[in-house]
Amino acid sequence: MKSVYNATDLPAKELYEVFSTNGTLTNLVQEDNGKTPAQRFRSEDGVANARGRILGGSSMINIGFCSRAEDKFYRESGIPWDKDLVQKAYQWVEETIVFQYNLSIWLSILKQALLEAAVGPDNGFNLNHIVGTKAIGSTFYEKGRRHGALELLNRGELKNLQVAVEASVEGIIFSNSLPSKDQVSCTFLYGNLSSLTAIGVIYSDSKGRTHQAFVRNKGEVILSAGAIGSRQLLLLSGVGSVPDLSSLQIPVVHHNPYVGKFMADNPCNNINIVVPFALDPSVVQAVGITSEFNYVETLSYNLPFSFPIYFGLFPNAISPLNTSLATIAVKIQGPLSSGSLRLTSFSGVRAGPIVRFNNFNNPIDLARCVKGVRKDGDVLKTEALEPFKTRDLQGRESFMFLGPSLPKNQPNESESTLCARGLNLIIIEAFPQLSFSFV
Ligand SMILES: Cc1cc2nc3c(=O)[nH]c(=O)nc-3n(C[C@H](O)[C@H](O)[C@H](O)COP(=O)(O)OP(=O)(O)OC[C@H]3O[C@@H](n4cnc5c(N)ncnc54)[C@H](O)[C@@H]3O)c2cc1C
Image (tube, rainbow, N blue to C red; front, side, top):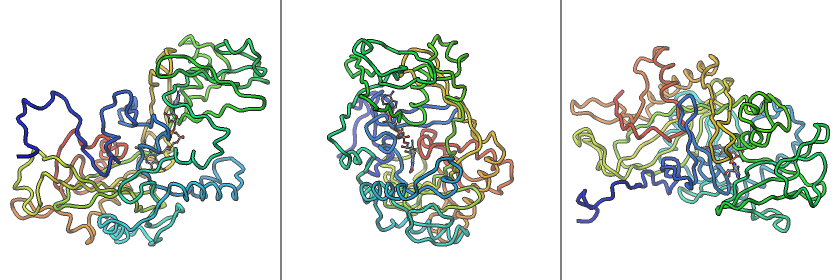
């Protein structure tokens, strides 16, 4: 019989493609071997997280939900944006890697449930971040292929571009003047602050060889290593707080106490409904945006392996070998809580920094999360979601959850606990625990 093996014939350790919405989620749950697309890490406050470590960055591991920034973002950014240019940039990205297609069954039902739960109005398909429920653009084409930021390279001015992959930038080279021939062998150069300039980078290739890349006249070094990588590189290059740098024996190039401070991530709370019938996988393509806590997003997928649960718990399921899950995630945008990033040593860029987000330290964030969890509760009470309940052996119908469920009577304390307990980067860690509950 196909697919049946004696356990002795199977390897002691093997990676199974657990989530097969064509790899959307596989990346996130895959064991990090130092080369996998997702570089996994756990914040000091215990939340599992990941960042992209391949060409295209985190756009190659993310969920692909595309919305334009809201007006509040422009107002509060303190940057005098050229709005026309911003619109052109959005269009340029959208026509290259953003897609709209018909909503899957799950997404259509969830959209209906959100409207029933008063997350309105129905904004149809809309790329703007506006209050209500809407279908959004996705960087996934249909349910399959991901289109990441690396494809934008094809639309760039390639004659001016040389891209090195499998290269790790070890530090930024600073000078108070442009490099001369002799400076090419220097590691870090120091100058007085008024004329301190980044003139290049030092990077190593996969064979461990070190390279130096300098900018030509009037060239610029643009640091775009992500929220974590950019701060890490600044600190390793000697830009940061003097006491912190000195304690690690990092030569100070420029004192700036804010480097590594104000680290924040939008906290996300998931509930995962075990669906009592086979459901097509779907990527995030429908979203409910509220003015109170921010947004509810969702996706569905199949688990192509059996669970250690009673077959009898699935009287109307097609088979536990093909279990469908629907995840509903409540996200808080622009949290007020923030933490910090610090280096553990001066041993180089490969030693991951310590990151702390202090999620929900600010009571306003916690209150927003509780509102979000309550909205989840409202969504679960809708008629649209009735068919997603599972019948137990006594014939009672209720939702079956994988991982955290919603508190039954939703008292404040439980909701707060759920906010802390269910905290997760969408999906990354809900499953290793394999705990089920009915509500
Ligand atoms: C699981 C997940 C889901 C997400 N879902 C969404 C979503 O649905 N919609 C959305 O809008 N956003 C989403 N995001 C967030 C979004 O992907 C990021 O905000 C965005 O990619 C950040 O872009 P960036 O260029 O600042 O950094 P990144 O995309 O992280 O790019 C940084 C790049 O720098 C490289 N790098 C870092 N350090 C070094 C070094 N020392 N040397 C050489 N290279 C280096 C990294 O390898 C990476 O390629 C998600 C993020 C994650 C992790």
